[in-house]
Image (tube, rainbow over all chains, first blue to last red; front, side):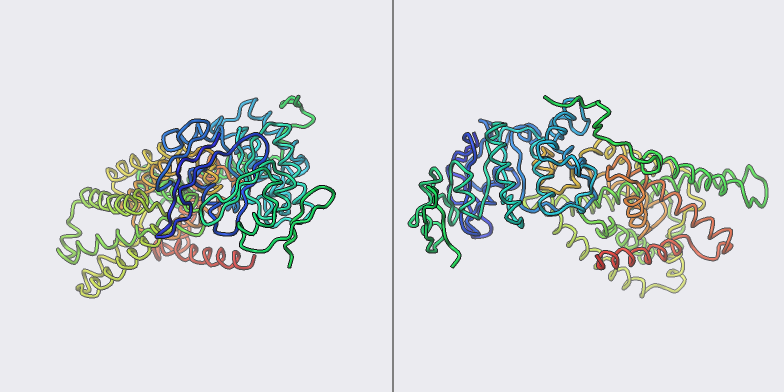
Length: 252
Length: 334
């Protein structure tokens, strides 16, 4: 499990994550929602050891992230960030190979190659494997990065806004994939999502943040209520039932 | 459950055409360097061959030391900073070198500067340059701040300060002193002192010994800090080690031949497009060999075409400036 105990992070005088205690990484898909500036990405950065907490402790599978070697943690936790700009010209295959770095330190074994093949197959990237990343569409690029995360072969997978800048078809495609990763491969996926309908449709649990604190944490269906969403986003959200599923309407 | 990784039907590496393979490209480049070395050593000998060879081979070794230091450190610097139009000189390395020499001339006059023991001078310059960068780096990256950009910015400001201060002192100099100083400040590869050459070569070799085992980690660093950390790279420790190696190599080569400003920028960027792979195991040696091609080619043009009518650094800075403009404009056009 990924456990945060009384974690606080401040930037300047502003508290971005405020005394959060939370356990993530249960079975299935957990969605992290909340308005911009709620502290979702900072929370990911804290777990992904990119920033150090000012107070509190983060453990992954019982290992304290400040004392455990980074290479060890990279075998149980993979993080896909929001921005993935790469200066060098890499092919899809090169990128996916990097996923094996925590295991092989760059010297690929037969087992590493098997994992790379599996990840490329799983993301249906075989036809693009020798393409350069800057020659791919947004959806293909996102799949390539997810393939890298998959090749890392970790129990926990953190995805920060994987649907950013994708069109309808690719958004659905990525969410279907995330679901399959959880159901077929047993990954514990935690993902930041902005579209609450995607969160409700594809995740098992929703954690809602606001102003650096967790304001709601429940199964998806319980979060999809006007009063809860109002408290999270400070905006009126109508929730209707369509074919037995709650759908939030917030288009105006 | 999986296809056998060695199965030929879907080999993960469909063999590219032989020219596209990095190994072939590097070998071709190596052959070009050997040819240039042979041309430089054996042609246009005015007197006894043995005498010419003795002097010229020292120059070739100096070129190798400089290309290695500049090529490897610039590629590493680009990877650390995630920016390919920088050179380590942005940290004020050359400016600091010129400042040290200017202070010596300013304080003790050109006669004393020329009489100064070369080895002591080299030693002082290396130590002061490394100390300066260690201080800057330790303060801005090693501490709580941990920001490469802040460090670069402070480096630029300090570099500008050194340059202005140097200029001010140079204006106060006696014209003869100034003449001696500006002569010494052009990079020169011919007739290096043997002891200095050996000392510099040792430092550069030590730098390489630190960088080469980290080549695969450097590959991961091309993805940027967040992704590298996610893949288990101890970013802070690795960058500190790499930066220390870069400082030592640059200091040693600058103290040996003088400032070569754009040289690293040209060879590193040519290496990225020529090497045929982003991997540092290929880009770094390619940059070094391209450095040899530039230096040997430049020296040959200078000696045989212009009859020593200039200095190598003028030729290289001119070409480097043009190439830099090309890089910036091409970036803008995209």
